[in-house]
Amino acid sequence: MSVLRPVRAHRARRARRQAARAAAEARHEAMWIRFWAAMHDATKTTTDGDAVTEGDTHA
Image (cartoon, rainbow, N blue to C red; front, side, top):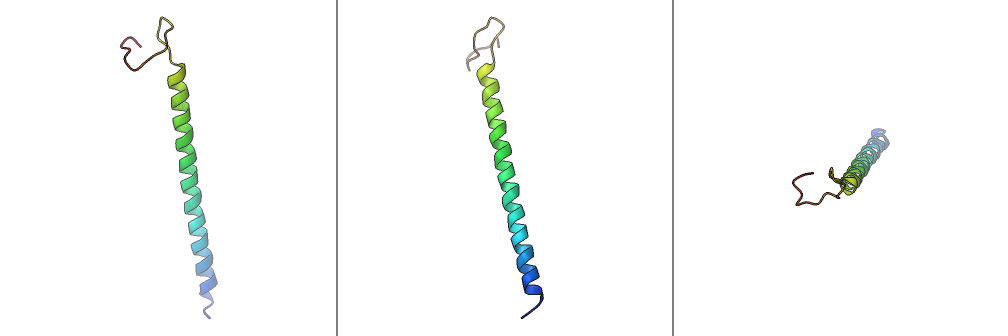
C-alpha cells in the first residue's frame, strides 16, 4: 500500500470540509443580508410619518 494514500485521503477530506464551510458561511452571510434588508424596508418611513410602500414617490 502506498504511503501517500492516507495523505491524499486527508487532503481530500480537508478540501471537502473547507468547501462545505465556505458554502455555509456564504449562505449565512446571505441570510443576514436579506434579514437586514427586510428590517430596513420594514422600518422605512416618509417625511410625513407614513410607512413606505412600493407605490410611494415621495419617499
